[in-house]
Length: 153
Image (cartoon, rainbow, N blue to C red; front, side):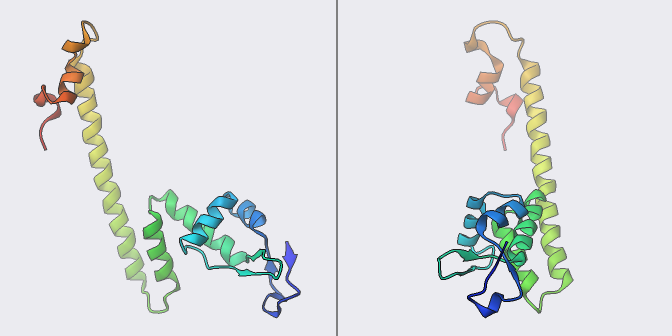
């Protein structure tokens, strides 16, 4: 932790170098730089020495991003959420709408994964695991010769 004495703006604010921000947010320095480049965190001011001046706000925002990622939000979606978060006119219903959209995406992904799982089970069950690979029903299905297993979309 460092106090910025050169800049009155940070006189009573605890500031951090990038390594400390990364440690406190439980990410690596490259992640901090990447979020900065993608404008997911506020662009930090710089000291005369060239070091970036990070604050607790940066750490909190990185933690927000990581939690949103854990819920399946993409960085683009997170950027939208962050913009809504700082917009004074944003309503709770707008945030709820974003969460509902993500929920629907997750439901669709689960349905797709269930279909993939069932198809794989059918493929595995169709193969005795013996004989030459040229007769393998799994390869035939993947090559499009055995359409009844994979089905057509």
